[in-house]
Image (cartoon, one colour):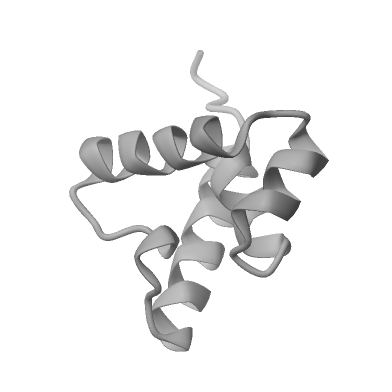
Length: 73
């Protein structure tokens, strides 16, 4: 879901372009974005968030997906 959300942001928040890039149906992209909202409790870029909120989403997703592995595990 994180990868889908990042692809969505990277493709100008366009379902058609994101779906094409990921080889998915646009409804699948829409479902994954809604599911991410359900899990996080935050609004998603699919809701047409203001630019600053969209940047925050991009940063948070990028940071979370690239965090280093836990050395204790």
